[in-house]
Each structure stands twice: as C-alpha cells, then as structure tokens.
Length: 423
Image (cartoon, rainbow, N blue to C red; front, side, top):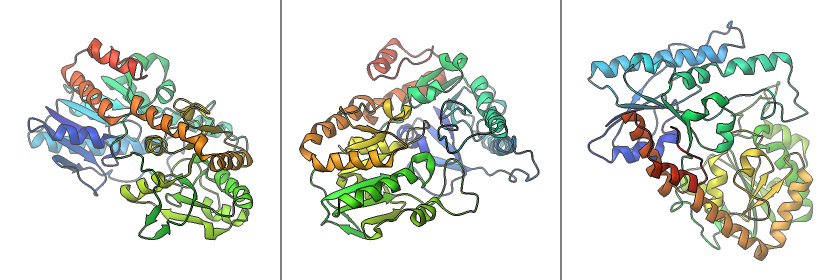
C-alpha cells in the first residue's frame, strides 16, 4: 500500500501509525511536511513550503484562510512532483485546518482521503468565550466563523474523518458526524509507566531531595491552558507548604489564543504581578521526551488546566505513569477524569481551590494511591496505543479499499468507549 501523510509538523499525530506502516516492506510511506527536523525509520519525508505568507493587507477575517490556501497550493505542487516520480498514493491521511489537505483530492482525484479533525471553532459555548474577563465582540465572532472555512471544505471533500475524543468530534457540524470516527492517537503505556519512588534528577536540575513536587506541562504558557491561574495557585501554596517545589515544562510563548497587547509574555507578566519564591519554582523549558517522562513520573501532583478546547497528550501521559492529575472541571477533561475516582477536578478560575486541592493530595498520599492506580487503568482500558494502533491501521486500510469497517472493529471501538467507526 502506498500512503501519503500530510501535516505541517512532522510527525505529530501520525508518529506511531506512519512508523507502523513503514515497518511493512510492502508499504511505501511518504510524509509531506514543512518540518525539516526529525525522521522516522522507513518513512520518506518530503517538504512543502508556501510561496509566501498571507498578505498583511488581506482582510483579517480571511487571513487564516489565505494561509490555508497557500499551504494547499504548496501541497499541490508537491503532489505534481510525486506523480512525476511515479508515486500515486492508495490513501491520503492529512490533518485538517492549516490547509495541506485542501486541494489534494484535486491532485489525486482517484485517491481516498482520511482527514484528522482536531477542532472546529465556535464563538459561543466553548473556548473562545470561556473567560468572562476576555469578552468577544462582533468582529471576533465573524472572524471565528470564517476560520472554519478550510475545515468545512475538508469535511465535504474527505472520504472519511476521525477525531481523537468524543468532545472534539461533538464540535463538528452534526451533519458530518456519520463519516467521522472517534479514535484517539493512543498512549504508549509501556513507555509512560509508573516508576514508584522516582526522584527528579535532570542534567540541569537536581530535585532528589524534594518530597513535595507539583508539576505543570504545556507547549506554551498561556491563558488557554490556565497558566495565570496555576501561578496564582502556586503563590497560595507556597504560603502553606514551605518545602513544596514546582516544575513547569514548556516554552515561554503563546500557542493558543491571544498574546498580550504590549508584547510581554504571560510568564513575565505573572511574575511581576504575583509574589513568588522563585527558588522553589523551576522553569525547564521544552524537554526531550525522556526527561519530560522523568518529570511526570516523579510528580506528587500534576496540574492540568484547559479551556473547553483540544485535550492535550500530556494529561493522558501523566495518568499513564500513575500520576495524580488535578484537572480543570471542563469538558475535555471530564470525558476522562471523574472527580475522586481516577483524579481530581477543580474550578479553572479558582487559584485558591487549585491550591487547596494540591495541598489535599500532598496531605493524603496513601488515600490518593487508589486514584493513581485508577488513572493508570483508565489509560490502559481506553487509550493504550497497543489497542488503538491496530484500529488506526484497520481504518486506513478500509479507507484505501473504500470498504465499510467490519462489525468486529465497531464492537471493539464501542468497548473502548469510542462509539462506532463510520459507515
């Protein structure tokens, strides 16, 4: 089978499935991306690059659409090169939203397309209007509506789609649900497994003496992932826990949502605003996978806060290590965590409650042991890569064959809590 993957960031959600397909010598796996770094054994990476950035004078409602069109145009040019080299895929797997999949059905009209739908934007009821301190105006509402344009084109033109969680699928227009599977990327539970009694020792940070370790992980440090609320909670926590240390993994940048108007980072802004003992707060920056795993394995309590938005891998990976996750009481989290059963939930907007529940975990380690075990079991039961990867491969093969997934696959998907594969 000849498979073409399309994602601006390599390998992203396709890490495991592309590598698994490439292990079969009968497959030829090509990955179109903008990312020049990294590689996967057996996967042939080919690069595309938009010819220019969106024009600064383009109306701001359609600037993101222009960017998507430019990405789609770059992929078409790449497709022409692949065809000239004799490569025509049997199936295309692409991430929808940024544009690489927009015109690929025109470049390969006989090839079925399986699109990964991560998010569909709404002005009301999810992430955009979640914070009452950050109200939307009509200009924002109109811009958000237009932001869905490339996703709507993909929803129409793709042969099948998938979303990683029920919550994320529920955001897509209802009329497209019959063609969209719910199938998570999967967590490598052999890699992300508990390491009882682990202490955190990194090349740049030795916390082997620390008994109370609170952790936070994010691609960026931003309101979408509750960074300001977490730092305010740390201030409350430091007043009552003089031995507690906090480790934050991630970049000092904004990945989702708005930046501060003066260009200041949220990290600098919060450090000016909130009195903190910085000797007990450790910003590691982004970490290699192995060091990141050490952080969550050594964690006493891992805090994961998010607006009603895309669910992060980090929360599930932390649960897989048997970490006690303190999550926000928001829809992406509550699909996985039940308060007092396999983790704890808090009000996203209450730093004081976040601090109090962290202290509750630190005060009752024995009582929390059962929650840790159930967190690990939740991932084994519902998100284990060993179970989900075969379902991904089966779905890709079904799309390539233009066939309906078998009843066996549907029953397996239902047992795992993912609904049914699409008919």
